[in-house]
Image 1 (cartoon, rainbow, N blue to C red):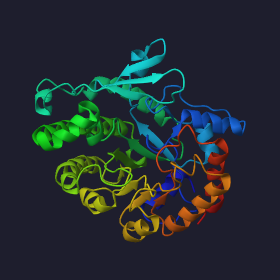
Image 2: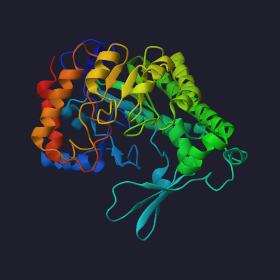
Image 3: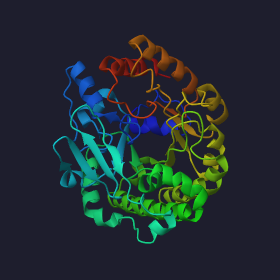
Length: 389
């Protein structure tokens, strides 16, 4: 059974020969280049990947096909890079690197002691109100990158092999991008003081995302591989470790209906592909609303967050939505635990999530730079040995 077939069975709540394995199928189920290089070096494998990082802010890579075959990865990401003109616009200073992204947000990474870029510039922060800020604001036209995106996608398609394709987003979720544009403190205040401005900005981002999906799906159809697409990945972090990001009524009445508009458009273009939605944190109370909005796959299943018990989620939602993630905690276990703890955690989680299909193994968010190589290989070996049906 190949990766496409294995993933297809899982998404249809059927048991395959083994649990499908996702690593780098999306920007939130991926591999930090530092952890990847360390893991490959540990086994004397070549750490090959496209030097144009798919997400330079998070330093995320896509392994080359040789390594993907070796790791028996069942998914393949197709989509835009987070910053498509990153190399051309990167500025090197004496002690740091700086980049302004497509949304005019500035990011910096120090040359010593830092592994990721951190945001340091918020383009709408200095305005008295968000409504006033939006009077002179426009989001970049995704079609201006049509040629670049087409070239990138065609290059990616050459490496798909027999894996299942996941179409991935071009930017963070509509709430996350709003926060990055306005600044966290200002935006949260805006939800009370200027709700019409918040609503307008979210609408602009919905339009922007639909324009991206329209362009990407057109490219996919022109290349005749739309039938190979099994999932389309969107995201918006709506939870914290202990609670929702906003009060439930605001999320249900303001944010989730706008997410649903994106999901409906995606399904109108590719009805057979399932809608994958990533949201960290304690989001159990809004899972029914996400289901109603059109979510068919939930990720990352952050079971260390309040109320996100795996057994409960499997029992209550395991036949209504695919659980993609929850393979192992990346906050305390994969990065800090012993090899034995990693193995035991994965076995426990597989026993809960695997029965009946509807489960794709992925770590809870990306494999970060601090994951020891021996823990990565313990995870992989346990999945391969214990993840058979």
